[in-house]
Image 1 (cartoon, rainbow, N blue to C red):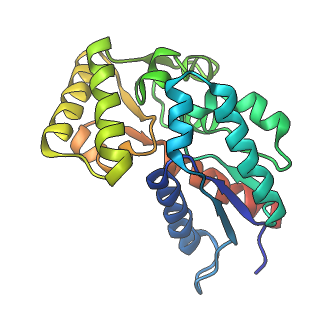
Image 2: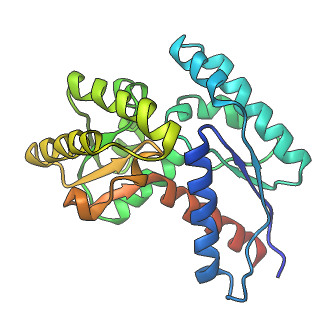
Image 3: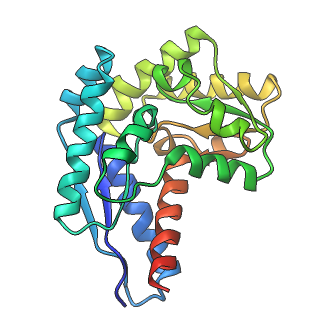
Length: 235
């Protein structure tokens, strides 16, 4: 079995590795068994450089970094690419225009997954940039879904847990997890019928079981869309 090569333009290491792992797990179900899977190519720049640019609001530098990854992935043979990071999709249009290979949009993939689940009011949990910029408002509105975000104090807490705990370790402290679940409870009380775990580190500690409501794992949705794309291309 020969499948197109999937490139992974990594932003954070936990997010990139989780995406790779989820595509590998899907391969067992979608590639006919016998340990077949597509060839995966990962390019992982130093996240410290990217994060410094984020803090300076230099999204042009962030975009350049990702485009550089995509160029290296193309040289390595990638025929389709994913970027397992929500926040940087604020530059997805420019990234796609400059990319030498097709790039799936996590925003479109997640909106489609929420629509498939029949969700109507979705709480978005992510970095402060994802939430403050209403990154998912337009993709959700296009499929009839309302975006809901936590209040400013909760946004600050999410930012702290993501960058001080989840990105460096892939884990949250007991107190960090408790605070995340309080935000989830608040969104549920506000009438949200689902969540978008719109930071690729959040599905490492949050799921439908501990959230008590439908929770879209944005990494899993992207991994599934990539696998469906390459299987369709090989058919």
